Length: 111
Image 1: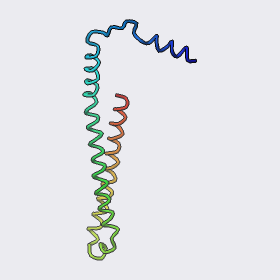
Image 2: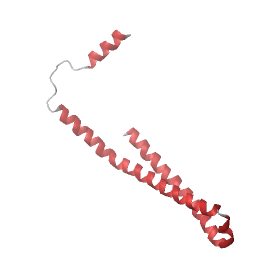
Image 3: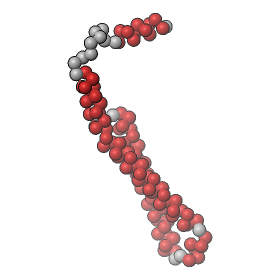
Image 4: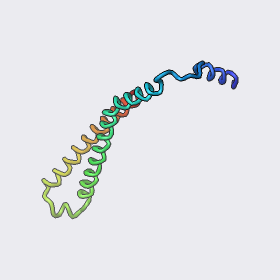
C-alpha cells in the first residue's frame, strides 16, 4: 500500500527542518573511524589475494615445467621429486591463503 509506505517514510524523517549542530561533522567522523577500524582487515584480505596470485603463478610455472617431456630425459629424478613436493607445498599454502582471505572477507562483512 503506497499510502502506508509514504506515511512510514514521513514518520521516519526528523520533524524539525534545522540540522543538528555538528551532525554532519560527527557523521563524517564516525564513518572515518569505521573505515579506519576496517583498514587492517582490508590489508589482510589484499595480502591474501596477492599471496594466492603469486602462488598460482608459481604453480603454473612448475606445472608447465613438469608437462614438458624433455624435462624427464634431461633432469634427474630427484629434481622432478623436488618439483612435485613444491607443488604440494604450494597447494597447502594456497589453501591457507584462501582461508585467510575468507576470514578477512567475513569480518569485513560483519564489520
